Length: 127
Length: 174
Image 1 (cartoon, rainbow over the protein chains, first blue to last red):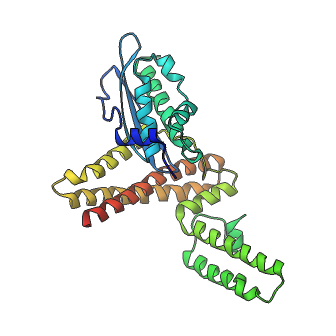
Image 2: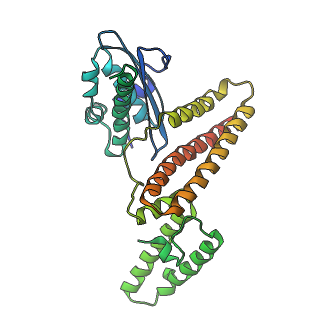
Image 3: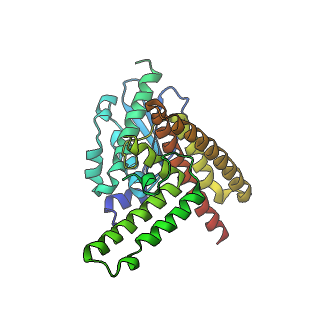
């Protein structure tokens, strides 16, 4: 199976790899996994006082498509409000990266990761 | 298809693997296409199909995770091709930490000690989860079946970790 150029680009030059301190009040963490392939994905967002995502980081153990999907999402969410970031869907990700049908679950994982991070932020901030 | 029925074995997680092996050989002999070479075209095709089923069934029942999945599928809970994400933050955080330790092994002064430590945790937790899985599947209630499904999902991460561990060990040896 051939990866698209965009997948290869994100895989070879992943954006925003790393971690924030998860105990920082402005940081929220989304952890998700795909049992079928054993992929584990952590996506973190740093949210400012206006509710805008200032920065994002990820760490993914998985295939090229999973790494590319999470890398892409960290790029997309920067500068977005939580409500806007909530709108990101796996179909947008799969389309942008030209993922083949067998790799759609990687984009689902990335969507679930950002949603989990937003949920974590809301829980941390009582709402 | 009910794989347990095919081997005439009780549909349960705790399976006698020696018995499974000998029944597999018996069935294979009985349906081996060579035994049906004198038969009609239809008989030959059926024998080929049956041999394929027997092989699939054997491989599924032999492995504990596939056997557990098959058992749940027979009870109406299909999880083998599910696409939904797993989100148990605490469990995943632990997986992430183990994968990080494995990934950082090249920078470690004592790679063998790290591998031993991961291996120990892996085997211990796998054993624990498999025991819990056996208990849950034995209960045979819808609630326990859901719990069993979650235990299978967790075990899959450990099997993946094991693959990665073996790969790393090989690379270190090369």
